[in-house]
Image 1 (cartoon, protein in one colour):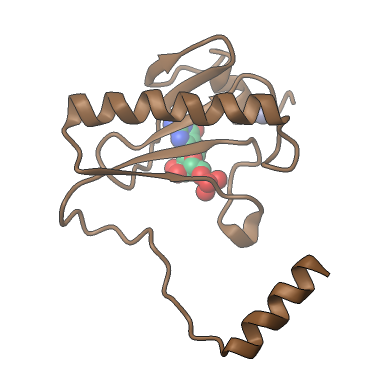
Image 2 (image 1 turned 135 degrees about the horizontal axis):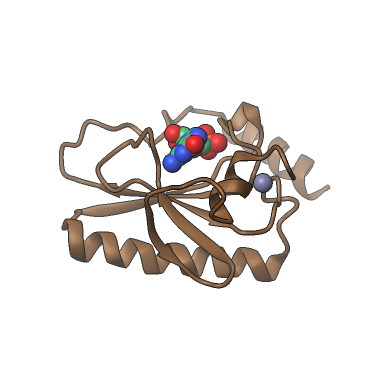
Length: 134
Ligand code: 5GP
Ligand code: ZN
């Protein structure tokens, strides 16, 4: 993908604040961080999203996210970590190259990554279940 910014960053063609790298991934600091240390796990090969990334690479992405989460916990003393991964513009994906967000969380950091729960009826939940498994 010659015009993909994350391909260029992941392969070192564009400089980035890299905090970790292995054979398959480069992990960089997000330039619009939710919190101090917000990092992005970028595969060096281009996959648009969850549906394109092969299972073995996906497993390695999560393992890499775990390594980085541990680094952030140790070095930045964060109180918690969110792993977030958006697929499709409706879900908030703005860069169409798979990336896993590793977001350190601090008590009272003012961020709102959690959703607002809704209250479907028992019947509505069963209908959804049946649509999914039917
Ligand atoms: P998405 O919304 O697609 O899940 O996340 C894209 C993320 O990439 C955003 O958090 C945004 O701040 C970050 N981002 C976009 N362009 C760049 C860039 O050129 N460099 C860095 N370091 N982060 C970027
Ligand atoms: Zn790409």
